[in-house]
Length: 347
Ligand SMILES: *[C@@H]1O[C@H](CO)[C@@H](O)[C@H](O)[C@H]1NC(C)=O
Ligand SMILES: *[C@@H]1O[C@H](CO)[C@@H](O)[C@H](O)[C@H]1NC(C)=O
Ligand SMILES: *[C@@H]1O[C@H](CO)[C@@H](O)[C@H](O)[C@H]1NC(C)=O
Image (tube, rainbow, N blue to C red; front, side):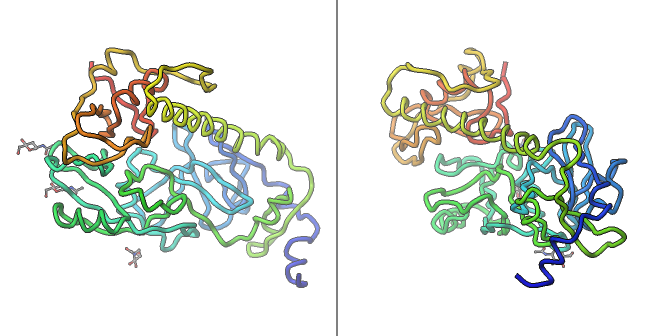
């Protein structure tokens, strides 16, 4: 540990850190503080944020971050101040479209894991089960797929038209068995500078030193407003139980589906369980698996076998074993693969 480091982090708490307050967008729950600041916020003047970390609030309460060369604003889904990471998505719910134009040049952010994805434009007659379509950039005549698998790349190159290859800052490296992705999961980015992670992880508050726009300091005064514990409770406490609940349901259903048993035992506890009604579920299109069709049901992870019946969610074109998705939809009105594209009733 050198002197410079000590000066950096253990200097007396300067006034400017203490005068910067945490802020949230109205109706939102994402806590914004240094190095981020909400541009419109009275409580967060310019000195409360680091250059390149200004965010704004949408009318819906989303926290928006503009990346200089990437076609406008992204919505911030979560920030881990200690790890210096953030997760972003498209406020208009078509992330793949934004990925096609993504360019992190000139921003403070880079990918934690970056993986090349190749995009293909295929005629819709060629709708194989083994690839996951990207619904929001497909239409009735063309289906777009993105893959990072070499074998899928070769296959698609032979039958579809190649669009481009993009480096995607994915959340975690994709497994080899995942042939394609609809790329609807949040993008994971990190930042190097300012180095506030250590300060944050020790319960400090990071900010500019008084009357300085270059030097960072760490303050260990108790923070005003929302306590650190509450901040963690909000940021982690909401996301984690919901995730665990969903994983629980998927696991439970997967087991049930493969054994073809009826549902017994406790239902996973979810705060808001609201499913689709029977006629809507019944109205979704079904297909029978042919001899040449390949693929895996994302719910039970079982291979599709000839003469099995699949059901497709019209809003996002994801297909599942009929019996698997029929168990899911009464509990949850969203596609188990892409939470962002809730199935729309056909009736
Ligand atoms: C990203 O944007 C910068 C600035 O416009 C440009 O120089 C660079 O070539 C772009 N990179 C890609 C991969 O498009
Ligand atoms: C796919 O190809 C068709 C026909 O060339 C074109 O109209 C459509 O815009 C393409 N879609 C994408 C996402 O490139
Ligand atoms: C698909 O193709 C048909 C027949 O060529 C055409 O009438 C229709 O407008 C096309 N749909 C879209 C969404 O481009």
